[in-house]
Amino acid sequence: MKQIAPACVLLCLLAGCNSNDDGQGTSPTSGAPNALAISIGTSGVCTTINVLCGAVTICQPGTNNCQTVSDLLIDVGSVGLRVFGSVLATPLEQSVDAQGRPLGVCAFFADGTTSWGPVQLADVVLGEAQAVRTPIQVISPTFGGQSVAVNPCNDMVDADPQETGFNGILGIGLFKQDCGPVCVANSNNTLYFSCTGGSCAGTAVPLANQVQNPIWLLPSGNNGLVLTLPNVPSTGARTVSGSLILGIDTAANNTPAPGISVLLTDANGFITTVYKGSTLAQSIIDSGSNGFFFPDASLPDCAAPLDPFYCPSNPVNLSATMLGVNGAQTVMPFQVANTQQLVQTNNAAFNNLAGEFPIFDWGLPFFLGRTVFVGIEGQSSSLGTGPFFAF
Amino acid sequence: MEILLRTAAFMTLSATAVLPPAWAALGQSAATVERDQVVMRGQLRSGSVNGYSIDTITVAGLEIKEYVSPDGVVFAVVWKGTGVPDLPLLLGEYFGEYREGLTKARNRKPRVREPFRMKSAGLVVEQAGNSRSLWGRAYLSTHLPPGVRPEDIQ
Image (cartoon, rainbow over all chains, first blue to last red; front, side):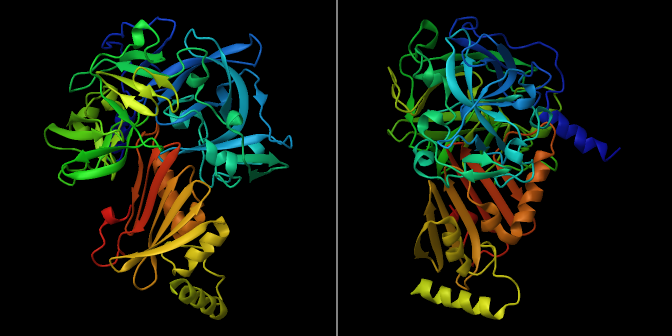
């Protein structure tokens, strides 16, 4: 019995242990043509705590042969649509290199996970917007004669949705492509590969053939996006529902409030966070991380298996200063609760889940009770030209 | 001068050792830094700080720093940029330990979405960033030169 307890606790940390719907209400913008419904704790696939998910429609290029794929991680920390091949019933169009060899791509994520699979062309429909034709990654560990353990990504790659807790990732971060100029200029870029006869070799790929942020390809509302989510009580909520809105200042539902802070990121998407006198460059704002992660030796770590997380005996109110490269700064208050106590609530959404890490990662709790604008690189809006975060 | 000395040391090691040439950087002699540079076809520059030296390899959108202790052993590796470097090469004999940590993280079902962090008796590996610009570091926590703190490894 002793052995079962930790596993049970872990499962409850990782999963929303209750699917009862007593959500905190939906955002007033749901249902607008440029809005996609997003939620935590409402499905049987996206069951991980603080994992925000939504759906898109994927079509065979140039046809009405389409399917809706739900349970996609809504991730402003990555770029590109990535969907497990095992949930795709729609045939797509394989992308090839200049010699006609099929292209594969590795996607590396900050949590140490990696996905591998072919680059394929799809028509992607976001909300009720016009479809955009874009290369996506079809996650498939066996593509090109490879495997979960042996593949060009030099790492163990994602196997299936049961393992990851989502059907794919909708990467709608600060950039237009997942790689950018580095992969145009270098064949040894570690992301893109040409595969033939069971082996894959690094290859350079033109920008247009790389996996794209579908939002910047939209005919309108293509300068960025808005994530808006309600707040939750300090003990969390069973479910949370909000909106992903396409565009910045292009419609009534994506107009920034006066006085909003615009934090320009550096060319790599980083901001700086000053916390308790330490300057943490390479800080990120990331809806795909499920907690606040930052270094503080005064906060006790939880006992295993919750040891990556903090377990102060009582909730602690803290604050940090977020700085953009444009000199903009904002003081951000936040709370860190006892993770052990949080998971015992069986809730799925928390604004005070936090853990230890050497840089500052403003994860999903940051987005709760907030409207966050994400400006895509090189795209202009009334808030300026991206890459930036504004809130 | 430093590079010449290291190359000489590497040649001596290769000539006398019955084992195949070291295939690792972390925990190995600094000579492996040049090996890494050659394998990765990168540019190398060196600098010294507070008694230890940092060799930086830049290649294809990646910057890889190898921290070398006064006694010539690589005690930390830091990488930054688009993609992830050849970790089997950089972590060498510690790659297996890293894989174990990764497997442990992967086997949590469903998975936690957090920056990757593993800590064993002697090895710490951490990774964060966004998919366009990842940052990671691996260091031998029990072999840091005197006065070197983890926060010095950036």
